[in-house]
Image (tube, rainbow, N blue to C red; front, top):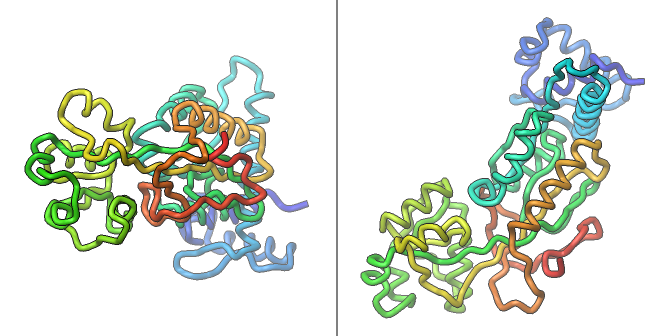
Length: 336
């Protein structure tokens, strides 16, 4: 039987990334923290913590942290069920990682139901997929949205659907920068609005349109979906925006679709623990339900640019490639 105080101390050390900060959070001495970690490592006959700055878990520590997080969730759920009514009970802390474009479009419907339930104390981390995957593997989040269909060992990847992006500009910008339509000379001269320097979605779009790579064009970088939309809507440039986010602005006449017959589809997957506590399973079910209602279902033969794979930007997709499903992917986005 593992010692609960030692387990909780270990988790706080990893969360705080410091023995000193963990001691402060737990209201014990730094020496007591070290003793608990040492005792836990000795009981398991393995090193759990890398004593670097910042502190980080070893591969064995990542496995144990997932266990502690699951234990916390199960304990919180049990207290909620067993506590006599109307005695108030504390919400169960849960952390998830979501890309910025999802947060700006369909994910608020998930947040509304989760937050109003008052069953969870929710932390949403908006970060690049490489980082969020690490958070998931370490057990710091119970799930993350990714463009990768392949799940790591111990995890599942469930298809959510596809986000549709279109290329927009103001009518005035379109008339000035693209009087003859979107062609190579005009693309080289007109500024594009991108999320950040790691965002290659625009490059992928241009390559799919012209058949070769174009990268030497003027760029504005606005690392927020709202700021990116506003930048395009004010006439600072043109750019790829989720169609659901842009539609109200299009309806108002402030934006036009530069390529009505050319769209980019980005497959999204929800990665989560293979063995989920009941509350985490309910969160997964809610995210899948809302996503499959709000996102686009694609037919396999649909002629669009499909973006999948790993991404380095909090926005989401980074490069175009076929989605490769693993045996731990519940449903392919091309078939649901």
